[in-house]
Amino acid sequence: MASMAAWLIGIIIVVCQVSTPSAQGGGGGNPMSIVIAFSVVGSVVGLLILVVIGIFSYKFAKKVVREWRNTSTPPTDLESAPEEILEKDAPEMDKFLREIADEYPIRFTAQQLNVFTNNYATRLGSGGFGDVYKGQFPNGLKIAVKILKRNSDKKAENQFMAEIGTIGRTRHRNLLRMYGFCYDEFMSALVLEYMENGSLDRFLYGKTRNEIDWEKLQEIATGTARGIAYLHEECHRRIIHYDIKPANILLDVDFSPKIGDFGLSNLCNRDNTHVSLTEYRGTPGYSAPELLRFNFPVTFKCDVYSFGMVLFEMIGRRKNAEVSPSGSIDWFPIQIWERFDKGELVNMSGECNVEEDGERKMAIERMCMVALWCVQDTPEDRPPMSAVVKMLEGSAEIMPPPKPFQYMYPISTDTSAVTAVTVAMDSEQMSSGSSSSPIWYKGSVPILRT
Image (tube, rainbow, N blue to C red; front, side):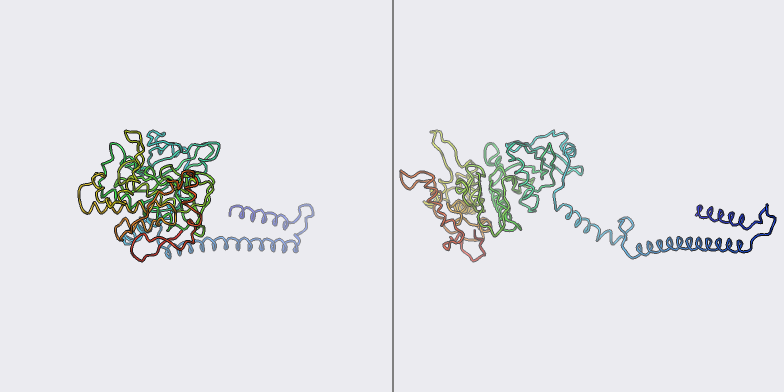
């Protein structure tokens, strides 16, 4: 506005000079020049007035629109909101927004992880994958930071991508939660849920083997089965874990189980019933027999076999394979089968450190039969995890399982072990189109096929 006023004054001075009689000529001013001068001044003044009016109109309209928006939309500041909105809508909306924000893992920096872990002061454990450290978010939430080792063959990188691609996309009460990750040129790390009671294996072997009562052990078995069933049957894309074992079943403060360590897992479309592997996956002693065959198509039923081997260890609270004082191999799963074959499963309670109780005896027998079904030689004979959950819950009568582990016994003296496995797992038997599917329990329920 000041510049416009200065401009106007300058024009008036010029016009006055033009309209003043010339000192040298002594004559009067030119009337035409005077008219032209005042016309120019009038036009400029009118233009300036219009500009001023437009500016004031714009500011007024902007103020009106702002006031209209404030009166037509609810206040965003909770302190200025009405009390009934603050009490009713705000907590529900905050919860909803938090759930949306928690849908995907957060990418953290290496500096943030250093702060969370107090410069990696407390190490929870270590392994071939790397080290796990205890940490805490600024809000007090405890976390576990898993630092992956990097190597030249990119196994750590593949494990990192497998974890992000599977557990980072899933939410289930029996699956370990991932809060975020860190990835840069120096570090690959996962920020995971902290589990107060560690892994299941520490409560099955050694000095702490009897700290969990039998009822809680049943709940852990059923909860783990629910988590695997979710991976296989409820996720948008089926997830095969490949490494179900007690060390990967973690327990929270209430001993609720959560499946972790998805570094070997694989996403597959539901239309693809078989997956071809080019390398061995899993842990010896828990892996299904079909995983021992190079580049052989496998199904999600390999996780069912591994879960069955875990059940055996939960039943006996011991490792499946132990060396006896005489030096021979004491293999617990075959002992379970021999007891079942002789009708002596009901007497297993004494060996399992369970009090003589009719209900507990039935529960042990039920768990043994479920384990025997899970470890059948061919994948198609193994029940899906949804059926396993139903059988463990005791809501169905379990049918007698066939003899498992026949792939371990050669059919003739001159037949190699590999040939024996090949015969026991013939490709026709493992085909998804088999019409002779077994019946695992009595009852008519939807069954997931391979």
